[in-house]
View 1 (cartoon, rainbow, N blue to C red):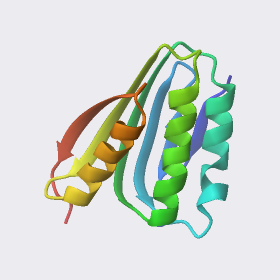
View 2 (cartoon, helix red, strand yellow; view 1 turned 90 degrees about the vertical axis):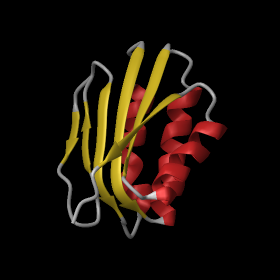
View 3 (spheres, one colour; view 1 turned 180 degrees about the horizontal axis):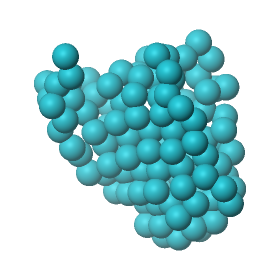
Length: 124
């Protein structure tokens, strides 16, 4: 299995998924077509063969469409029985109650994922 590396843009986040199960999604997620943007990530997760996964999600903003498809990606991880340890490091900006609540909503619905929350300094 190869790494998946996609450089972030103004409307799409940086993606860095490594075969050993360390994953990063960072930046802004406001794509016109969220399904197309998340497709390589979904395919990578489907092909992932490791036992452990740590996913750092550090999105300063995501629109509704991206939020729905991100949930689908997390659900695919949640439902993949071959992954024994599934940890989500959810990063959100200080004072961003919506960002925090989005993580809590996902956590409530995805019982096999272990969520840990990290407050980041507000970006100006």
